[in-house]
Image (cartoon, rainbow, N blue to C red; front, top):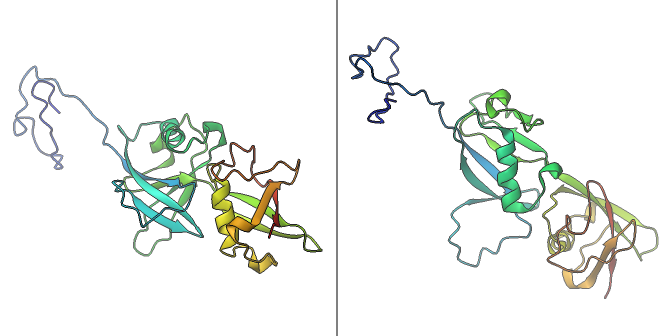
Length: 228
């Protein structure tokens, strides 16, 4: 754009002359990289309550038993570094930068499969990973192994799509809805189970505690027992 009057020049025809754009001698032109608008997929720590009215206009998405919100994020330009996305996610979820792995998903184009790419280097620019307008960026999900005790032989299942801001309440909810039934773990009411870490037996019965607060990392195990 022209620096003096901040007039934007958006002529797409490369043959347009400076005169036709109103550019005169001694005018200053400022080059700006185009902004990129992406959607950031943020994991919700608990199941959203759809009965309550909310002023939050963000889209809610359900994938494989868990919920996300899609937040529109406008970069300053495609030269923005990946670290800015990490910082945005930390501010919303509390998940530290070093505990994040980012995955960008391109928009589906006609007759072409979805493309995904890991944004592995936070010092690189979005343009280095060919992140485009309309792409979605989210966290690479983790896994959590769940053992059912007190029923004779130990039974084990694995919960997919786990994130470190998940609460104990959300883990109970997923067990209660029967996510482990295919591995022999029956549906247990949320108020009828006790949870603790498998490695040190630490009780995890504070519903609003997150996995991050409990010190649970990727592919850790938890034990559950039916209490009544």
